Image (cartoon, rainbow, N blue to C red; front, top):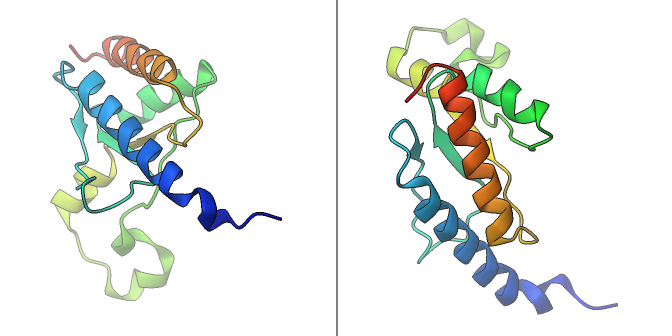
Length: 129
């Protein structure tokens, strides 16, 4: 049985390439802010963006069978931290806008372009530019 580490360099290179492909494809979209990752020094495991109308965009993309997600809600809003809750408006705003795009090493550049095109259309449908 081969060890998973044997293919790690290939997976690392692929994930970095795919993240950069997303970065380039998303650049023309005014309403989308890519959550930056230093891909020269880290291996990305998610590709996340900030978008307006995130929940509507999420539903639209899921309706097209595009596997978007919402990861890591703001810690201070979680039940475990209820005793210390306080309003953190900037954090809450960012948390309501973050969307995880499909990201795994078996994606192709064509897949990424399809996701980005669908994202652009979903933003338009949700009232964006």
